[in-house]
Amino acid sequence: MHLKRMLWNTALLSAGLVLASCGGSPEDTARDVPEASLGTATAELNSPIYDRARTYAANNPKRDGGTWDQWCGSLMWRFGQLPESSARPSAIEAYHASTIVSLDASKALIGAFHWWDIGAYGHVGTDLNGAGRTVFMATRNLAESWGDAIGVNSVSGYSSRTGARYLGWSMDYAGGRIAGGGGPPVDGTGGLPWTTTEQDGIPGPIYYMRIQTVGRRDFGYTGPIDGVTGPNTEKVRVRITARELNRRGSPRTSAQEDGIPGSIYWTRVQTVGRSFGYTGPIDGIPGPNTYKAEHKICAYAVNRAF
Image (cartoon, rainbow, N blue to C red; front, side, top):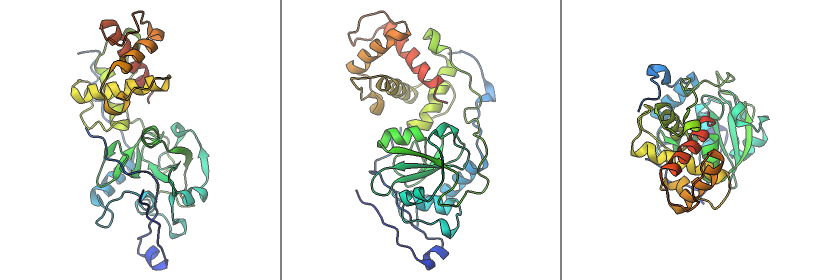
């Protein structure tokens, strides 16, 4: 793993070229019926800091003509317009110079910094909407790419993809704070209600909207949030279900990564499905009752995802 050490001096700091490295193995980013009509109620709501991050990434899709990969601290320092006194050689050193508020990412405020222990130099990102759902970072491990290794992922999405240990969140980056930060989380779901699919196993538009919303946050889904299923939504649905299955025990299914259900996946659906009312055989062969259990498990997961 190639990691860049920060070389800095007063001239570089004054020029705003501070470099801060972060850990992690480079990976390619994964790309990829009426229940009720919600109309425009599902439009995403974002904070001003989110809007600033989108603009910053649009204007700086590359870092000085190269990739942003491994330069997470540099992105925080530049995007946040932080003072020179907050510059550190690496994300992990900045972490040690910051005040951790909580290990519960769901309580993070807008503009908070999230920290991970990974590799030699750690990793950091800033929370654009609060609650750890949309974290701006420099890495190839993104749910949504906005340039060359610059974009967003959730705290859970980055942690699960890399195996990094989450260290908590702070409002400061080695004493520096992002202007306008500190507000409560915004409702990036547009007020979506829970889906009744968890109870009846019957999919509908709210169910699929929740899948698409979680898919955009955690699995690289880039399609519309419209409640209409299709190949990309179905792939995300399987990945969300598989993640819930993997959280509940073993054997582990690789469908969490590739969205392709196999015999292990279906056996796990049937096994976990017992707690959702499934009474059929545990044989890894899907049928109507297995599919109903699968929808219930996925609905359970997306109802609690935000």
